[in-house]
Image (cartoon, rainbow, N blue to C red; front, side):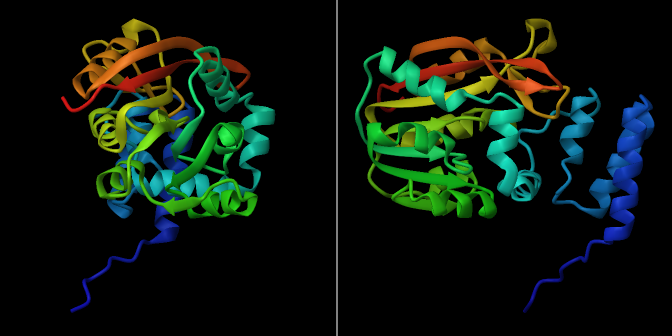
Length: 277
């Protein structure tokens, strides 16, 4: 029996979303939240990211992660111009920073690498000569198609990162990277436990995060920042790594990217999996 599928009223959805954006832009946050809730009622899978926009205004509960439909839609739309926008316009250089830190710490070469949130292949390409075999995973099919055309990866999957980590039964990796993944993930336990399950003992987990001043977090380890991306407190990152079986090798402050010309503060983390907790 075919399950009943509710067809989205695209016209009503566009009207509600555009109205919500206009209200948010004009500072009418209560009215904007009401309009975003209309959006969610029309589109429960949340392709437009209404839930994170509500959270970024300090209303409602902070979601555990950005909706999969939102992330896939966001990156599918920008796949063809992704690198030009991210690197040339937003000053994104995290993959190069990863390479520099691995070399400075005399880590590598590596046999098997998993590139979570591989996008168009920026991190895979930057580390290609340091790794024998690279697997890439991204939620955006269009991003994976661009990465495939570059012939950088031995294997590519279209999948959500934690789902892939949960389902994967191939041999473990000795390096897992997650550059620009944490801004779309709030609670870190599923990602960190998944990474641990897919690393050999002594394997490295290298990732970037965005952060905010300590007072922004209050009692929480993560919040949705003003640009609808998750930010994480350093204390929370350290605590979750310890709890999931990792020893911290290094954590350093970086500029992740520019947003409206202003630097976005973040951290680059190198952790080593010590074995089952």
